[in-house]
Length: 251
Image 1 (tube, rainbow, N blue to C red):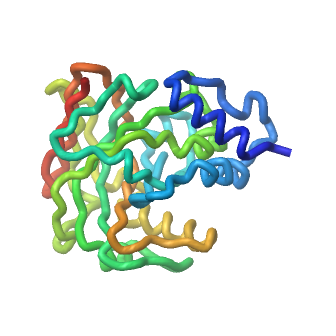
Image 2 (image 1 turned 30 degrees about the vertical axis):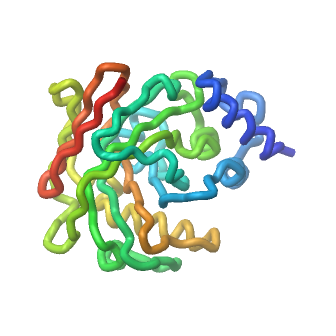
């Protein structure tokens, strides 16, 4: 049997000491997705800010060699304030990616939730930057590994909120820049065809686990481009048409 608590401790220690480890499946080849989510649950923050989706875009799937979306809870302590720099020394191998963030205006749960329900339940949307930090060497992992590792969650930054009415989030253009140089472009449709559809997928998955989204929570609807490695001195900017720009400095 897989020792869920021992694997969770291994991941916590890697993060605390900023020392990457081998994938859990190297020593625990029997680790499957349900057990991996149990390992994730063992690390779940007491103060959850919301949820994140991962591996929702084809670019990201190609980058990490996986082919299905995954999810994890967000730690409120990982939120960055506007203007606050990213302290690179606190992380192992940080990467930045642009997101469309949903802010829930009311609770949303159930096995039949669709994109329209997500939009109706959202008080606002915003540009987001997520900082990933895999606890595994060189971001090499299986689906079970990344799920156990809280889907590489590390830090997140959310821009100014705007009402979702009148926006076609499938068609908004996305530009990711590092030190003033564009690194990738995409559209909102890169996240499972529509970012609200990605959030609906999350709600349906949570319903199967007896959970849902709550008013005031945020959802990072999935990276829209391949993630960009960042280091001290770098500046990254995510620009999403109609939603604005968000810049993060690293030190």
